[in-house]
Length: 301
Image 1 (tube, one colour):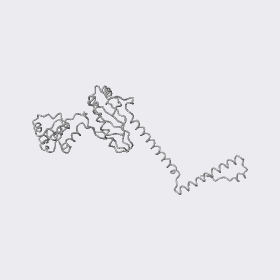
Image 2 (tube, helix red, strand yellow):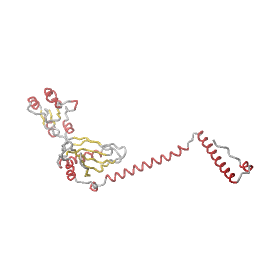
Image 3 (cartoon, rainbow, N blue to C red):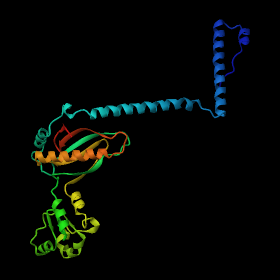
Image 4 (tube, rainbow, N blue to C red):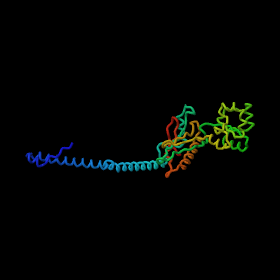
């Protein structure tokens, strides 16, 4: 609680010393200021006015503006770095050289455990949808043998042109019944609708191997071209955070096979980037190639 100020006349009447008089004057001044401030504060509270919120509002706005400018400068810097030629990186290597070192790192390991991957940095504005799509590899990571049942000559030719390993109609069904066609090497089977009824006798042969065509699974179709293209060598990809990683081969693949897969991946990713709806399209930045147990090399992508 604030004490009432001591009057000057009273201090003089008591015959106080100059030092005491000066102290009294100083105390009176501070007490008067404190009383005035308290009265102002009470009046502001009654009027519903707060000096704290009013003072902090411009400060918060200024902080947000500074953060926005820092983010814009950071994005601009990343865009410049993304456009830097990969040859300027100290980790750059042409693909044959990089593959030589990566294969050396995978010596003694199984083919399935030695995957070669390309990873790209994606530079995009905040809120831009991630890159995604699918790649049709010239050399799939997993060999897929497809069996197609159709009695339509045109559909049979489409199936052969799109990579089906074995195509046939009624005669193929009879060969499977007789056991003259081995089914062990096939991974998937398709059929056109007109033959689905004729396949019932093969249920015990095809079913246990997962080769029985089924409309619910999409393996009974009149669009064999689309079905086969989606099944043979197609690898989906999707950007996570600011990185896009794609498995493009095994250490056992030849240089030519991996290079063709890298080119296919590059074309698919760049095509996906052009479809992104944004004022500034995403930029595909530095890309590295690495293996499961090997180092990473910067490459041209």
